[in-house]
Length: 116
Image (cartoon, rainbow, N blue to C red):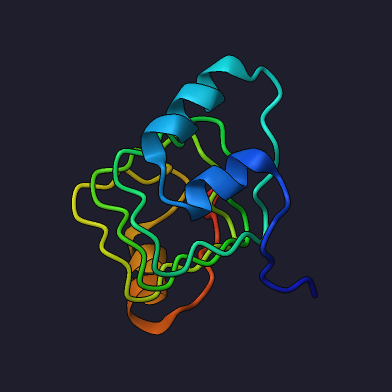
């Protein structure tokens, strides 16, 4: 099992510094987005982040401020959002509400429910 990591990608480091405007600008110039799988986003203020096309699978968002982020085109499978602020978020359709609530309240990893 892979653990949470501080990634070395410059785009990830921009997020870790909570420089959302610079992240969104740089992301708009990249055609092949890096993977942020198993990334550590705990406690970060990520409001305003453009999450379209991001691989955030198995990432940790404990206590992060995610308010208003549109995750509908991001991969969040296996991610945990324990104690995060999620007001106004749009989650992928593959994530059922019970998965989101369990992750928010208990830190479980969110599983996609496809084919149900």
